[in-house]
Length: 570
Image (cartoon, rainbow, N blue to C red; front, side, top):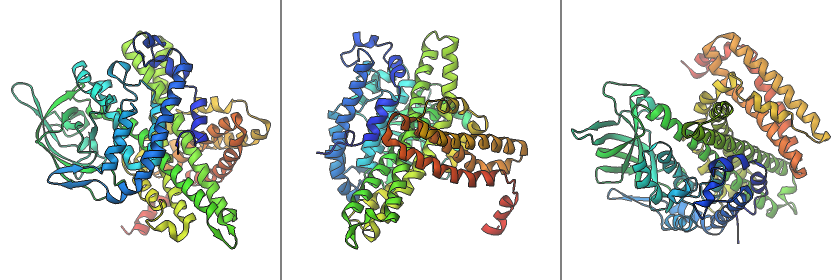
């Protein structure tokens, strides 16, 4: 029997130490829902017990059911014939197992049959599912479709779709990308038009649509004639029908269990979701924040699986009459992998906590009578979420790629063979820093918050936390980095050179990430002695890596820009 929650001390530690009580209180309406719904908790202790039990259930399904089937799903994958997608029987069985467990509407309100759990707990579920089979997460993780309808749809749409999402009778797809445009969503051309009765129809193409064979689609389309930018786009809901044609599925490097589709819309009947013109600037931004968190969790799950596979192999593989995990070259590599996984997870769940706070305060401000303090909190957590979600995706996905790469290296030649899971983790990890916005685009999304110092208040709170005396010197190292970061930001701002700003943006975002994650790990090390070695290793590595980036940023070396002509050849 394997359970991907109970066997993960780091995940259990995270659940117990994330300070979810205020979030839980707000989403449960001060626990008044307990009087209306049998599934609602009576208090935070009851809610935390619910979270733990649900995580144990999903952990058991992931370990006992999904993981043993993953290799076959990867090798045989989804099939496409006669215009129809057919998922592997094991994929369908996995979804049925999760449906029977009642976790297909994790974040939906009680009144629609959902669990009303915070994003943080749902993200833990997606991490465990990803550890078992990363491709399955791309279906299970699309619960954000239902959540978006809950946030922005009208009452009729909510009543129509959300109960069936919670029952697992509906699945969803997010139809954004088009041929030739990729991440340039403001250039979307798929046309939305109305007939004389006001009925909307969709006409055009979408590409690279995950689970594009879904029953319910959220579609970004151009509703305003004569527009060419994001202000002419709206969000629509449509359903699977003969006019919505799956033209093909992509033959991918990895993530074989889920179909990635090219779709043709031949006047597909649709409903407007929310208000016209807000499709990109509000609704897709909300979707993308959720997608960043989901893919970050997917990456952490893959990295966890890759690390465990490497550690197991190294403990069992003997060379020169001893297991290879006793060789410094190997145990140093394994240590670095473990640190990367732990660091990514720390940032992931700090990010989800902030996303939960942004959502709960946002709901209060839109639907209640908030105080000035509550309005200020909503504004603050919105800024933090806008910075942390891209920062988290960049770190988690780049780390997953490195951990998966090193896992093959630990395995040696056998890791390159299909007989071992290491090569699947390597292939599956590769997409994570590409889809839902490449790492380069995450830098673009994060750099504004770095320059505006949106994290400084939270950094100050973490820096003021009580630490054991043996960790004080490491906090001092982190705060020295922070002082240099402020200098670097001031230097770039004063330079007033847009091209130089863009050139060093990634370094600045990575430097900010190192500071923030260092403080998160030191905070956790103060609560659990077993985490101190990881925190110390991360801070020492960060100090070295930070120094190289800092030197580059403040050099002001315009030759770094000019070299593009000589090095690239144009």
